[in-house]
Image 1 (cartoon, rainbow, N blue to C red):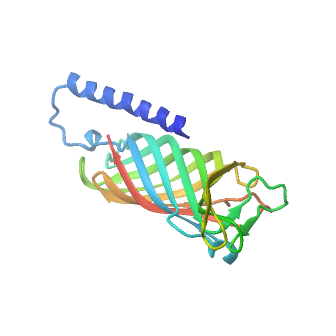
Image 2 (cartoon, one colour):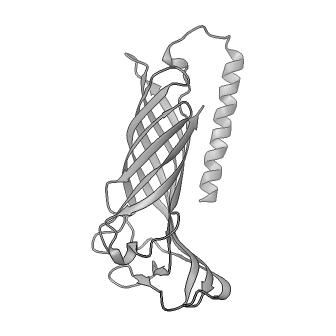
Image 3 (cartoon, rainbow, N blue to C red):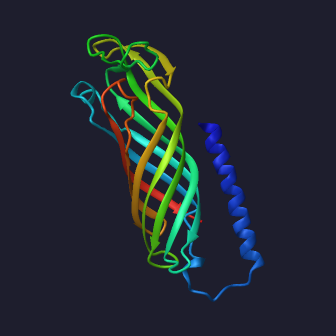
Length: 241
C-alpha cells in the first residue's frame, strides 16, 4: 500500500513539473474558453465508510469511525462541442477501514463462511479494524460551470482489484476491559472477499472542494461466504491541477 501511494505521488510530482514548464514556455493567453480550466488531474478523498446489509450480530459490534482514503491521478478530456463537459479517466488506490468493538473477524479461517465472532465475555482488543486496499481505475463524466473556481458536478464509476486485506488488533484486554498487554495482531487473507470491486460514484462541489458519494454494486464477500453486504462511502474530495 505504501509503495503504491509513493509511486502515485511520484507521478504527480512529474506531472506538476511538466505543467509548470508548459506555463513558462507559453505566453499568457487571453482565451476564456474552458480548455484552460484546471482539469482535476489529482484527487484525494477522505470518507466515512459503511456496509449495507450488515446482520445485527455484526452491526451491534461495528463501533468507532470507519473511514477511507482514495488517491487518484486523472486525465481530463473536454468535449469538442461544449468544453464545459469533459471525461476524466485515471488510476489510483482506494482503501477502506471498518472499525469493530469486541469482535474478531477470522479472515484466515478454513470454515465455509467467514466467522464474525463476538468476544464480549473474553479477551479482546481495545482497537480492532478490517482494512481493504484496491488498485482502482475511475472514470467520470464531468461538468464545470466556469473555467476556474466554478461549480463542478461529476458522475461516474470505478473498478478495482483487491491488493491487500487484513485485520489488525491492538491492545489486548480482558472481559472487564482491563489491559492484559500491548500485543498487536495482524492477519492477512483475501480468501472470503470479492477480488474485483465495482462502484458507482458522484460528486458535487465548488472550486477545489467537493462532496462525494460512492456505492459498491457487487458484494464485499464472495457468493456463499457470508451475508450480502455492500460498501458505501460519503466524504470530501480535494482536487486540482
